[in-house]
Structures are given as structure tokens and as C-alpha cells.
Amino acid sequence: PTAPATTFPLPEQNVKAAVQWVRSEAGLTDPAIVIHGFSAGARLAALVATTADDPTYAGVELWPGVGDGVDGTILFYGYYDGMQFFAEDYYGPTPPTTASSIAAADGADPDLLVVHGTDDSLTPTTDSVALVDALTTAGGATELVLVEGADHAFDGYGTAALTPAGRALVPTVDAYLDGVDGALG
Image (cartoon, rainbow, N blue to C red):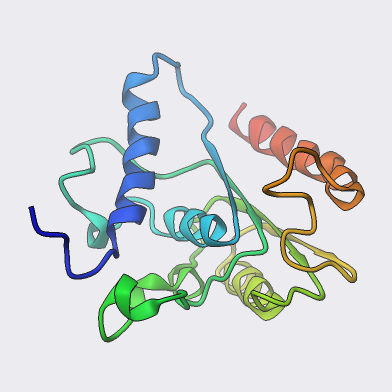
């Protein structure tokens, strides 16, 4: 088989399909689904969170009749304006406007917890601020945590243990998860 000319929107469809699988096949009653992503994974998670049941992402990977919305999303040092490393390989010659979770933000989106280091040398903190601003303007609820002096992957992502900065965020993440659970009853 020939590989597709671009990657987008297959990764987004795959995450949405995973959410649908949990909703329909996991054997859970009324599951609260929270997704979490780091860096590029945060980009994916934010786009999934802000495009629930959007027909733009329809495809063979998705399950007809099963919602792909999530109840919460935790994002660590992502990029949300549609920027993509190796953009032409991912999107083709022109990134689609549908690739921006900032543009897709509306009042129907789930609560988000957005965490970013103020000295991130890979992804700009401004993207996290812009996403939170867009969600807040649209009437959504988000929490932005800026970790002073922290660079990309400051929490120990990709290593065997959390860093002190990562451990310091545990109560914030726990409180967020308790809030999502409490909101669902």
C-alpha cells in the first residue's frame, strides 16, 4: 500500500477512536475520560478536546454513532496554534485552519489544565496563554499553571522519575482530576 501524502488528520482520528472505544467497549458505566499529553501529545490532546464530534475528523478510524468528546484534558508544554514540526510532511503545503485548537476553542469544550514552563526553549509559552485566553473568552473553564524558570520537559517526562518540579505539580493535577470527577457526579 502507498502511504498517504500527509499525516493529518490520522493521529487526531486515532486519539478520537481510542476515546470512542473506551466509551463503547471498555465495559465501564458512564466513564469519565480525561486525556493527558506532553509536547506534541499535548497538541493532539488539545485538538481532540476542542473538536468533539467535529465532522472534519470523520474517517474510517472513528466509530459511527459514538461520541469522541472528553470530560477533561491535561496539557503539558504543548503548541496549540496549528504549528507542527515538519509541517509540510504532516499537513501538506498549507496547514489547515482546523489544525488550531486555539481557533477551535468554544464554550462547549471540557475544562483544561494547561501547564507550561516560562523558559521553554522548544515551544512558546505564548501558545498556552493563547489557548487559555481563547477558552476563557468562549466561556470555558481552564487553569493555566506557568512554572517559573522551567524549560521543556521540566517535569521529568521521558525519564524514570519525576523531577522536583514534576512532583510539585502532583497536588495540582490531583485537584484537577477531583474537580472533573466531582463535576460529573
